[in-house]
Image: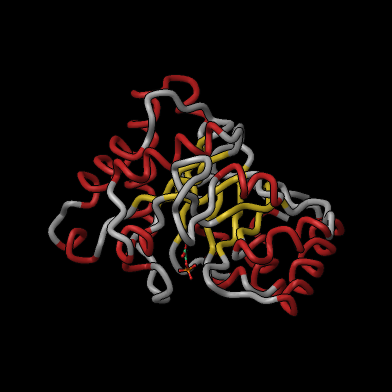
Length: 255
Ligand code: PEP
């Protein structure tokens, strides 16, 4: 029997961000994941966002129950942008969604909220779902600025028109990513509740239906309690999404 969800009317999403990991031999992990999903039927949508080089190969597997996403895109449809990839290209390769504004991109490439917003618009233009990341640094948390920071990122990164079908928010405290650290349940609840209020104020009913994922060192051992926090509607998972065993361990929260 499927377990209780934190927000029963919102179907959860558990998305794996493979980052710059994965070559052909890791395709077996997605096959294993799909077969576990089809056996156990989680009460959540499941997605893998592999490196762009694996998208078409994963799509060619036609695995039931595992949607695919990109990890970033350029704001333009095409043009002289060496090394970049457009939302339309990701869609053609098999993506249904694109992660935008991940803290690693904000830090490594200086992506501003304005740049993130342009990418979200590109994802929407291509008819896909944007998974928009927000989150505070440890310094900002220690300074008591968490809510101010995430609300400002939300305001600046989201276009004027967003609907629940094409917009997912991921709260990812920067200091929790890949570190093994996680905020307390009360801290997660506080941020998700503030994000929900901001989304409802801005998008009314659509904001009430938007999924807000938690991301940052989610693993099998902590997934269940994190996924039961009010307004946590799934997870964005980095390291633990690389093996079917760990990812399925996280999905246990929804089996
Ligand atoms: C991420 O990079 O989006 C992430 C949540 O990573 P990890 O799960 O490894 O902390």
